[in-house]
Amino acid sequence: MTRRLTVVGASLAGLRAVESAREHGFDGEIVLIGDEMHAPYDRPTLSKAFLTSGEDPVEYRSLAQIREDLGVRLLLGRRATGLDAGESVVRTDQGDVGYDTLIVATGASPRRLPFGHDLAGVHTLRTRADADLLRSALVPGSRLVVIGGGFIGSELASSARERAVDVTIVEGAPVPLVRAVGAELGRVFSDLHARNGVPLLCDAAVAGVRGVAGRVCAVDLADGRSLPADVVVVGIGAVPATDWLKGSGIALAPDGGVLCDERLATSLPDVYAAGDVVSWPNAPLAGGVTPTTRLENWTSASDQGRRAAVNALFPEDAEPFVTVPYFWSDWYGSRIQFVGTADAEEVSFVFGDHDSDRFAALFRSGDRLVGAATLNEPRKVMKYRRHIALGGSWIDALALISDPAVSSSPAS
Image (tube, rainbow, N blue to C red; front, side, top):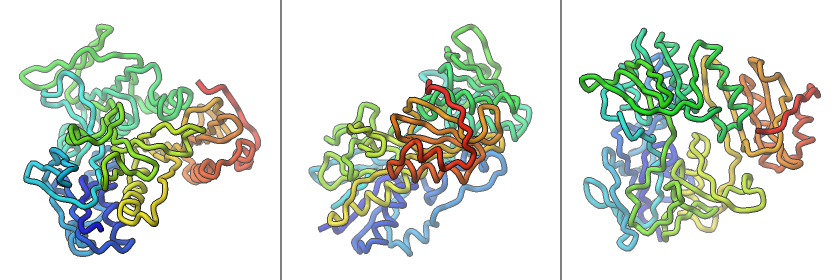
C-alpha cells in the first residue's frame, strides 16, 4: 500500500500530479521535490508577457496553498542526483528522499551550443531566473541574435521587437518548424517575421560565438557572415532532464526521454512519469503501430500529471493516457494554434490562405483528419481536436467549415 507519494519536479506536471492524488482521495504523505525556490508557475509567459511588460508569471498555487490545502511536504531548492530503485530512494544534493510510489516530472533542459555559452550576454530560457537575466539585457537599441527559428526563438524575437530591440533570427534548417507544423505551414508562419521587420536567415549554420573581454560581440556563420550581437539567445530545442536517472536501471528512449507504457508506468516498479520527460505510445498518432511520442507542451504536461497520479495510486482506475497534441504560440500580436500531427499527405486551406492574417489549414492522411493549424482563429481549432480524437473522417472535417471553398496542395 502506498504510504508516501514522492514527485520529482515541482512544475506544472508535478503539481497536477499532487493535486490529482488529493482530488482522488489519496490521504498518505506527499513529497514534492523541486530545484527552484519558486512555487510552480506558468512557464509559457516567460518568453512573452514577462519580457514585454514585466508581469510576474502566474503561480498555479502559492507555496502556502500547496503545503496547507494539499498537505504536501515541499522540498525546494533541491536537485535530484540519482535514483536507487532497490532502496526506493531518490538521491538529492541535500540527502535521500524515500518513496513508495514515485512520479518523475523533471521536464526538459535547453540545448546549448558547444561554444560561447560561458560568455556574458549568451542566454537560454527555461526558468524565471533565466528570464530575469534576459529581460534586463534586452534594452532598446540593443542587437539580439536568436539562434533557432522555432517557437521559443520566434516568441523571443517578437517580445524583443516590442521592446525596440534590433533582432535577427538564425535558423539552421531550410524551413523552420517542419517537424511541428510541416514545411508548408512552416514557411507561412515564418513570413510573420518579415512582415514585422525581423530578418530570418535560414539554412544558416552557426560556426562560432565571439566575445570581447568575456562578453559576446558577434555570431559567426559558416558562410563567412558575421552578425554583431549585444545579446544572443540560444533556442535550439530541449533535451529531457534525465541525467540524474542514468545508472538507475530505468529504460530511456534514444533522445533521453523516460520510456513509459500507455499508462505512464516506467520500466521500474512503482515509478511513473509525466510531462516533457515522457516517451510513450500515444494511440491517436500511432497509425496502427505503437511508436513512442514525446511532447513538450503545456496541455500534455498538465493532463499527464493528473493521469500519472491516478494510474500510480489507484490501479483499479488506471487508464491509458491518450491525447491529441495541442499547442499555441503568440508572435507579433497573432496567435498560432496547432492540433494533431503534421505527418500528412495533404494540406488544405479551408479558411483564408497563405497570405491571410486569419486562416485554418487541415492535414489529411488517408481518409482521416490528422492535424489542423490556425492563425488568429481561436475558436476553430478545438473543433478539429475533438474531430481527430474521435477518429473523424476527412470529408466530415471539411464540413465543419461553412465556406466550402478548399485550396489544396500536397504536403511537403
